Length: 153
Image 1 (cartoon, one colour):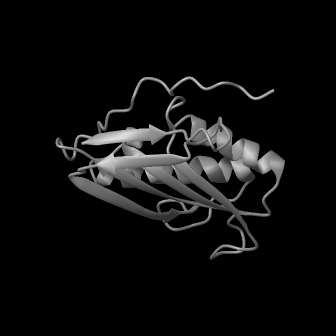
Image 2 (spheres, rainbow, N blue to C red):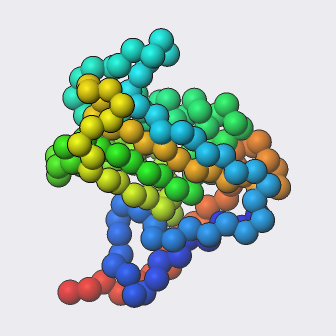
């Protein structure tokens, strides 16, 4: 299996995600449903955006592991944030950065929404992961670096 991270010259350079991720010949695809800040008993973990993000990413980790995947296998992240604002986006990015690679990050979308399934929920995140020939190992290779690009002035 080969995972490629594409950084088209015609698109702006992002520090927070990769515009295009392509996968050739995956052996296993893992789709993780949107996770919210429910604890193991299905009770909302109340708190600020940081506390809810922490719970969501812990839940995503458990979900990935249950399918034999890990964060290095994630190629797509979709997030849905209630009351999207710069401060909460920064918190989300800080928490997410502890889980995803810094060089080649998954393709990513973050959408502002007015409400989630429960009135106290503020963030929901879903992921897609791919596993290669050694399916179930959670070891999809990531290239070492992005290709160098000229900075715009």
